[in-house]
Image (cartoon, rainbow, N blue to C red):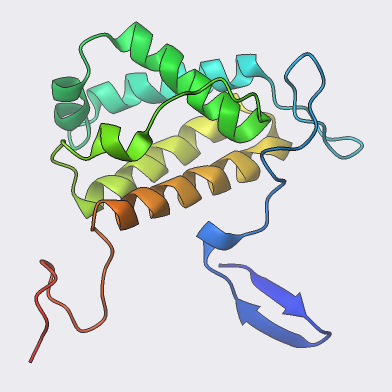
Length: 169
């Protein structure tokens, strides 16, 4: 985890879920690209569609994640379109996604270890598909979303608790 300098020489470690990223509601141009710093490649809808497509092809074939996702998704092309809209809303601020991710995930047999595998595949695919300048930002969004889902699904590790949330004596 990177150290963040605060007030001169004082450093502390910040969890990757809380790394600073450009706000999702940054003003957009009409090509739905995230404006960047000079010399930075813009993130586009096409990048996100390619990322979602390749990533979910890997998820479908993954021995750990495939059984969970394949049992839950009947129409993969439609699911990928919806997830491209989701990521467009998150990363480009397009507001195209209209849904409830927590409610969508709640009925499925998701375990805490699925999140680590999901993030690993996401990072690998993002490195292959996205402009290098955008990989860290999009992965940071994924980490924050994963953190929120784990929390909302009751899968967060608790100090002094056994895996099922039973307090230790």
